[in-house]
Length: 204
Image (cartoon, rainbow, N blue to C red):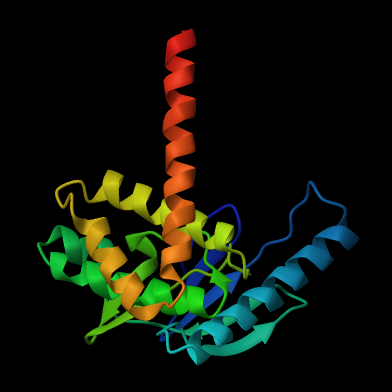
């Protein structure tokens, strides 16, 4: 196996046509607690991937889950990260991203790391990957946070496309019946953020 990425949560390996995600033991935690955390997070991630697939979202196909070892084996997805595709000039995919997020939220899944680096375009299909921070969440607040993170990511990474998020929202509304509630909560959160920033500047 070849290590291809390492993060705070897990290490990724490629084993031929298989992606192996390993949650390594954390020495700073008590072993009993660490074992429980890794087991629950591994199980939860696999279940959410399955829930997303049932909602019609293209996600990695789970081959095997070993909760005791903190391992998920998934089919390797051959394609390009959406970040690279959009930067190459294919801005028409923003609406497709919005439709995917709309289906995700329709299934009451909060992803937690919605960036174009966690989306892969493969044979015309848009895959959503890395459910390490995902959780089951029915709340409007959680979905608004997801959208806000996506917006911030698009504005910092794909600043050449200032209307990118507007196109995302067009797709989101198309795929999610309660989109208006989430957008309203997002607007409140962003207004609060602007107010807090202006207050900090005023006191400096």
